Length: 292
Image: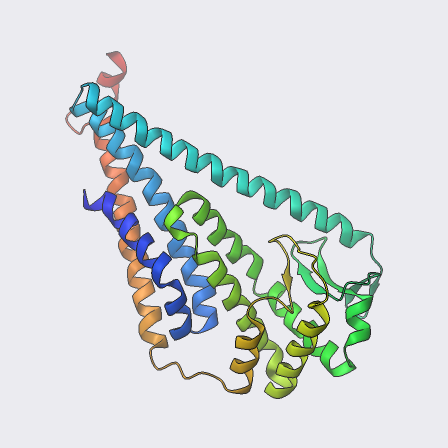
C-alpha cells in the first residue's frame, strides 16, 4: 500500500508546493528536478494502479474486486491515452514550427520573420532556431536585441523546452501535477534571464521590459514548444534581475528534491516487484506457468 500512496502523496505535495519550491530554489534546480520528480510520480502512479488491479484480480476474486480493478485499469488507460495525445500534439506543433523556420531567411544568427506582431522565441530541434519578427527588431535597440538573442540562446542551449514537455506530459498523466508545468516554464524564463544578464543586470531588465511592452500589443499565442523572451511573469523577472533574491535554502531544497526522487524511484521498483510477484510468483517457474 505505501508503494501506491507514495506517488499520490508526492504528486499532491508537488502540485501544492511547486510555486514555493521555485521561490526558494535556483531556476536551474527547478527546471531540472521538478520535471524528473513529476515524471517519476506519474509513471509510478500508473504502475501502482496496475499493480493494485492485478493483485485484486489474482488474490481477491469477486465482483467487487473485479469492479475496482476495472476502474483502476480504465483510469490508467485514460491517463496513458491523455499523455500520448499530448505528445502527439507537441510533435505536430514542433513540426509546424520547424517548417516555418525553414522558410525564413537566416541573418546574424537568427531567423527574421516579417510580421506586425512584436515577438521573439526559440524553436528547438535541428531545423529550429531563434525567430525574431520585424516588429520586435524595430522596437528594440541593438543592446536590447543582443540581450534578447542571449536569452533565446540560453533556452536552446539548456534544452528548456524538453524539460517543460516532460513536466507537461507528467501533468497529463497525473492530474495532481497540473500546476507544475507553469512553474517550470517561469523558472526557465528566469534561468534564461540570468544567462542573458552577463553583460549587466539592469540592461537585461530593461531589455525584458522593452520586449514585454512591444509584445503586449499582440494577442498571438505560440505553442508550448516555443519559449518567448517576453513570456512568464515579466514584473517578477525584471524585479529578480534588478534585485536578485537571496536563496538561503537553495541547497536544502535541491537536496530534498533529490531525496524525493530517490523515494519515488524506490516506490517504482517496489511496484515492479509487486507486479512480478502477482504475474510470476517466486515459487513457480516460468516453465510451469506456461504449461498451465
